[in-house]
Length: 83
Image (cartoon, rainbow, N blue to C red; front, side, top):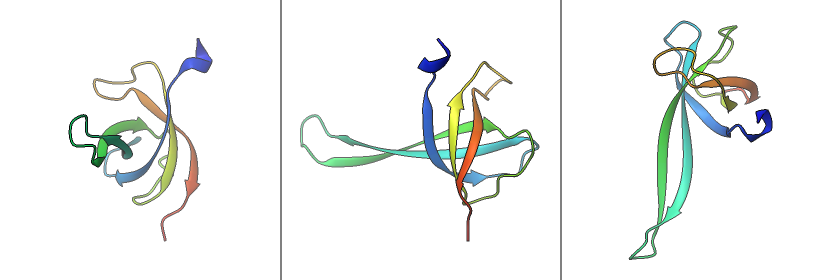
C-alpha cells in the first residue's frame, strides 16, 4: 500500500506558514469537446518539517496520512532551488 501513494512535482508558491508550504502542480488535459489542450493548476499544502523550502523551489511531494485539516502531502525532496 505504501508504494501506491501519489507522487507529484510542483513549484512552491508560498512558504509563509510554519512547517507548511503551498505547492502548485501543473498538469495538462485535453478539452472533451473542442480538443484544445488546457493547463490546469492545483494547489496542495505540504508538510516541510525543517522549513528548508523557499518560494520558487521545485519540489517533489508524496501523499501521506492527514497531518492537519488541509495537509495531506509531505515534501520528500527539493529538485531545484529558486534563483
